[in-house]
Image (cartoon, rainbow, N blue to C red; front, side, top):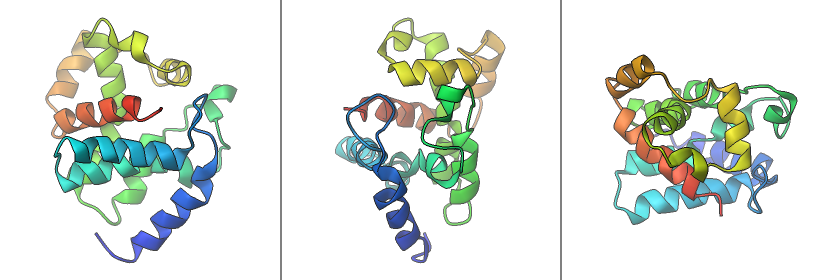
Length: 162
């Protein structure tokens, strides 16, 4: 990681991330720190801990407002975050970030109780993101490099909202 990016990430997390994280009582910065802490607590790689910390950075680098899903807009934060992070990190960090929304769609398709665990905001965004995957999409997702890491990241994402 380039040291030049650390102040920029810090500024985003301390500045733009102060707003509430959806309908929860935490903000984006707290959500990012919780997700990273969960990954670190489980002894995950530095790359996955970093991906967990930065998985929602795409929400902080666009100009679509605090919650574009309320307006029916998929902000594609996973793609924005991937593109932004790819300037500084390798695929072991950027690919789980890019795939964490697809991982939500995947988990909704393969785990009967996963959908019930989603926050109201996550349910709303799921509809905008394409809903649960089809059988063909599930097979294609499972074949992707870093899909396992993206699934784990997704679990930290959902757990890190308290």
